[in-house]
Image (cartoon, rainbow, N blue to C red; front, side, top):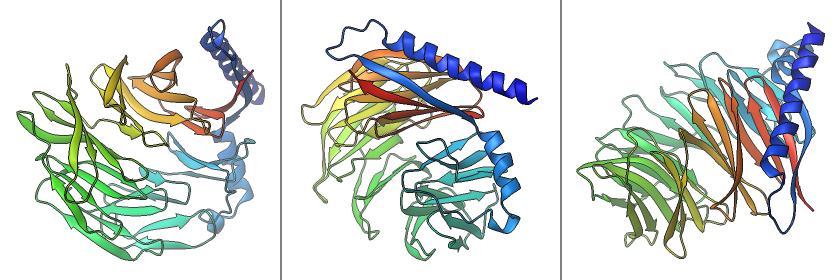
Length: 366
């Protein structure tokens, strides 16, 4: 069995080399970009080793290095370091949420849900019923009924709540505040204290609904995909109650489910998924580029240098990674088949998860 596992790991590593060659060989670049495969691990093996070495009462306590990345792949969550170590891994039965700081596992009838810190052995309990949602250092709880939520401190104390008569259809959080979109087309923004800064109905469609939303890290912009017949993208410049739409575009086709929206680290570009493609909007020039995409966009990450952006898309069991230079110049792509996948970037390294395997590729320019 061990020989078979080694063969599988070798085969996946070979696939990584092959993908890197196809993606970047012969591209006319000023500097050649190289993907250097570093390692591939099997998280099922890591989990078996972890539970063998740990006592059951220690499963919720972990000291995770600051450079470790959170991951959620199939029914596993945990943290992985750039060197390929897995200091903590957990198998969850139903649902889970994880960030750089906290993690939790819960069921479809969640109540009294424990939330664990990865920096020490402390934990707290969300006593009310609802689904936890963790974003960086922020902990939220979506209450039963689907139209209200609360924000909690890192000690589990309820800080504030927000209620609406209409169901929540999109949600986003950053250090600047919290944005929420509703089925009736209302888009609301709350500051870090929970004060309602503004409420807006972007309108412009026969059926108003907010399907996707994002906030720039500095709180300058909110972006949203909204409406049906016709669907459109809107970019809102935040200025208290005087916030206004500074750019919008109607889309030729429309998605009828939640839609991925994402700002780059600098906050001057925003990506959004529409039916059949990926839109990239320059927030300073108010211009948009479109890139054809099959399936749905699942995640977007960029290198620390900001020179390359990677997009993970899913079309049933086919997953595709797009490599974009200057945010909209498609350099290449590769695809693979999997039931579950994830993508993450740390520094200049790309991490790809495929079912039970995670691989790291170092990205260099020469």
